Image (tube, rainbow, N blue to C red; front, side):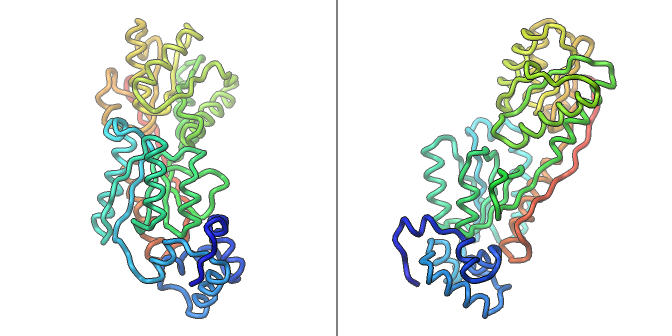
Length: 343
């Protein structure tokens, strides 16, 4: 197979090969990954296009030779401390690990805590060290999902990918709908100044849960003012700081919708320190329905997203791609409000 110069190779994508061969991008991906469900004539046409264009990433050479590592990389773009503290990450990993344990694939954890880690993991994955990738906590500017798709490496994200990313599967919860239901519950109980501790603005769940909060306020004839929002990380410490900021802006606020249970428990800490009673003075709602919500003081009203099921569904989507049984697509899981004493 001919090899073009490095600059030209980096500029080529699976879409270029697909256009030359007159087939779909998914078909090219199957050929590049050594998939069996491709007609011989189609395979020949795709391989000819690869040779003509000089598209020869390591993944293609290895997969066309029929070799497999029998591993799936689970990539987490967060500090290691959050890996063990965040119920969302822990539950998703648990679900994925249990599903993959019933397959021939071994799950391999990779951490991306800084730019150096990101570069090392990127090189590792693009050298085809794993057959597929499960990616957690991807930010909107993360180039890795698109790079994996262009290299023909099966990838499934937790959360919807950026709008300009194609060829990547994802599993998400109904973040916007769940948030809207939570805030509607607060309004129905008579709360009128409902602030939100939103998630990071460069992560889809943060954006979608804030949008749900805003829609619920508009539906209740209230204005979703920006000064009712503090966007921050999904951590307990961030929740404490955000709740203090909201109280300083709006001393009379009577409800907080937090975009995660960790943030909500942080808000409970801050309200307790400020002498505010929950729910008498300020009602609080979280998002996740983790064990933390049930053990909080008071127990936390929250939006349940099926954490283990999300991880299981991610693994199922990836296995379907690896077995050539499915095109990359998205799955959105239902959420529901769980009412406890905090609201």
